[in-house]
Image (cartoon, one colour):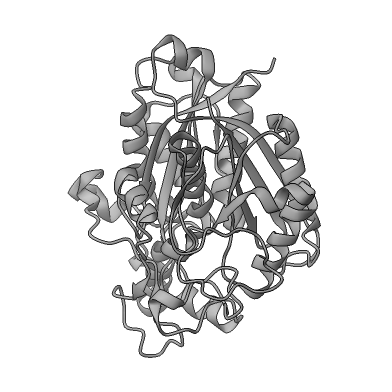
Length: 409
């Protein structure tokens, strides 16, 4: 059994807006959400900027008494899920055993892990919180979302580093397509802008050392020197097409293809030829039935690291051939930073909206494209284009490669 799958609801918490409407407007306007870190002192850190979520009220989704029991990455997930569920109107229209929950993350409850580790080392085991484990574990956002919406069907927590959100949406897509669920609450969340992760990524030379926040995340630019840490969550409601149509649901786009491969090359570096990602793109495009007549947009992983941007460009050209020079590409990480486990889900929303509205968000901050990055990266300003296909690509440490393909309905 193979069924069509559509997006009927979206929700997001990001450095450029705590709901989808705000996020989308700011992206189209080229607003940069990257700035000086405010959560903690950066005096001892080489990197002092990040894409922080701003003006977010956790009590909008979690009772005040429960905040201490819940890590912020889970609260971000619950906020994005709330918006997506309400946007879709899915609750009450599908059997609870046919409703799933797939929320990915790259790391999970890091703040809870560090706080309790410090308490243990400084004051002993009795000072470790009884809430420590259920706050910290990487599956708990999936579980909390399922509990909130009584989703008793398929359930999965994907952890594939920076591809987690994309893999989560892709696996949920196949669960609906293959008949295991009628709808899935799918996405990713992360909250790890923390001194420990900043130090870790910085010491491995992965983060940008540029001090100007507006010039730190510059994907495809010859001067790019690393990614900028971000945080947030993105959630999509994936629903079987006939079910959505029968209830009169609003449909943003059809999710029609998913590619999932591994470079099997290196623990952090992508395959220098981009072969794994190229294969993921080919798989997703074949499943989606993309043709040469389609007008295509790529929301690229576009991390602003020297290797990623070059190899991702190569992968697109490898997969599409000369057609690559006709596609529009952009990296919204130039505005949000890299949200790790959340990034694939947020960028999947961007791809769905690009198809739905015929608008392509820009890559901001990039002034001098690397000669090896020679595609149309939508520099500086958004543009209108009646795209029929939008692809979102993501890569993760360990060699994970993903591609999601959305089509106009």
